[in-house]
Amino acid sequence: MSSSNESTPAPATQQQDDELVHTEATATMLTFANPPENDTQTVATGCSHQGFSAIGINIVSGTDVIDFSLIDPSMCRDLASAIERCVDAKGFFIPALTGTMQVLNQKSVQITFANFSKAIAQLIKPKASVL
Amino acid sequence: MRKKAFLLSLSLFATIASAQGTTPATPPCAILSFSAATNIATIEFANCTTPAPTVALKSEAIVRIGDSQIPSTIIDVATADFGPVTSSLITLQPTTAAGTRNFQPADGPEYSGNTASVTFGTTEIPLVLATPVSYTEHTAHVGQASANNAVATTTDGGQADASAFRFQYDGAYVVFPPAGNAAKKWWDRGVQQEYQLSIDTTNQKSAAFTDDNQASAGVYLPRFTLGSFLNRARFGAQGVYSRALHSASSTFDGKLMFEGWLPFFQVQTLFSKNRFAAPPLSFSVGYGYRDQKAEGTGGSQGSVFDGTVAYHLYLLDQYRVDFEYRTVVNDVSDRPPTTPRTQHTWKASVLMSPKPGSAFSAVVSFENGHSGPVFTELRQYFVGIGLERLFDKK
Image (cartoon, rainbow over all chains, first blue to last red; front, side):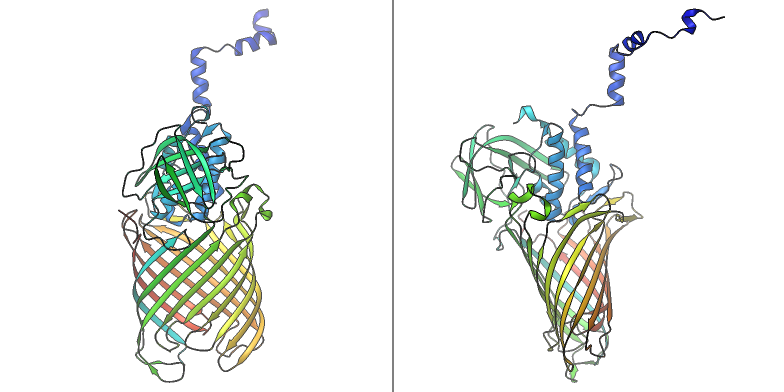
């Protein structure tokens, strides 16, 4: 025979209260599980991914080498626009990038996606600190 | 008349591109870009022989674009480090004042010319617009071309030399729709005008050598994307006049065009450590009317269809193979007997870049099929050494 405490579930309100207790440990676990979008590298990676998708290029991994010699000035503008809009929508500032992308094209730069998004992350700042 | 030609050419080529309408004496050092998201503009200092100017945050600057003058404040200074390319970025925001122009794309950076400059204090620096009103590009190749048989006949039946001096030129002039239209629906943003001149001929009057020259004019609606199925697609209309310089053969095509990319067919990488990422398979189709004049048959008219696909493949970390296949269905009423109704051309080019950013590159190409208004069945090899960025400052 089981005791009433074992057979009777805790009241719903008690259960919710238990789940809402945030210790330092659970907060750390939540951060690892769902990193917030205030990390400039996370924003840069996501928005760079979105930018290349906008011009028809699928990025599979960070080691993918982007060949800018084939990304013409018109595509550079569309790539830059997509990244700028994405970063802005996430509440961050980034300089206008069309010229930067065009220089990469003029120099026929080949760069891994990981290094590209790192460079983008260096340009991203919280809006409040700039605008 | 020889039907088959076999050309081997060794050439040097150079490319000159300009966003200023005329080729600048020096390469662009400072590039002005506008943000798609916010009312800012960024000046990128790259390729400069002197360091980027030292400026203070919140200091004033004046940006001039065409006839517009925009008092601005420097809000950010940063360094962009993309591996082999490191540049300085200065970002400006228009000083808030009633009646002043701004950089906001929705309002449009209302300029009518390609000239721009920025003044920091008393120093004025010329700028190149990343999104110019118009764009000009020239490419020229010169070299020796050889037929595989010493007995090459001229188009009038005489004997021609087995080697020739070959000249290739491609020029393009593009006029973009106003930048301020970016916020409108895609079909309402205005048309892009494209004019091209292409010359590929030799000094020999012989069907053993290519003689394919074109002038074209086209208007295109802005590009659009349909999910992950179709990318950067656009509709347009194009007129193309082609003629041989060494004979009276010519064609005029008036066509409706549709082109774009198919992202499902991404570039492939073989035998490399890393996967390469580049534009996917592209296509272009056109259908319209052809007016053809061929030597010996007079004029004839009819419909014409052409389709082109292009694709890239990467090999062994430093080789890129470009494939291009073109089909032309020539349905004119009175075709010359030597002209097939359907012409196929394909070309494969292998490009080698010793290292990213190198001043030299090499290209080897093989082209096979029918080409140009003289309807020569062409089999052509090309070996070239490219000199990159001849006009860059180091």
